Length: 218
Image (cartoon, rainbow, N blue to C red; front, side):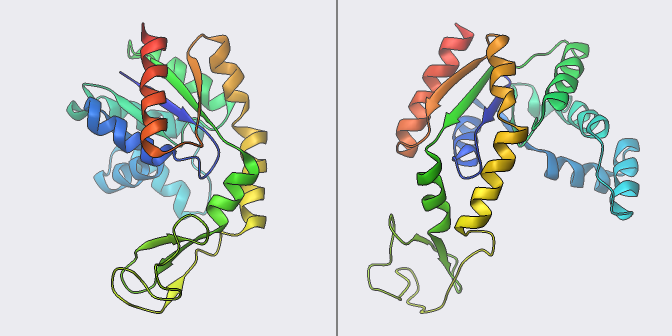
């Protein structure tokens, strides 16, 4: 079973991909991790990617697709995979489809996590963590039990990611709607897409995704 999860930054794709991978024996594939692995392994396509990155260039869609092709041919992908962060554009989706066809594979289901933009900005912009032990918190949804004191280790030092602010999150959302959201229509036209509410609990969203996959495969 080969899956794609769509949704804007902070929609919970990574968390849901981990749950799906564990339940169904799938491999969660990140393009960044695959690129690094190919470079480290010294494969032909990995050497090409390394040369481009060392010059500060962007690795082409063709190279990324070739790296995906190599990766999904490995034994641990026998039960299927979940693509994390790819495709992001219509040309990438078309290139991925052509590559899978050549390997006699296909995407079995694409699930879009639909979210409320303002709630998403609040969800991401409110995140912070303990600078000592890394425990995660949120201004509104998961504050520390004692203000200014980490529940886990008692530290009073906290940090926030530089890009976890409202302005940056809104810019990332705009980029998603410009480049990636057209994929919703692309996969809908191929009868491969279902949309679920991504604003519920982790368990609730997970159950909805399982139902969407069953519908698409059934």
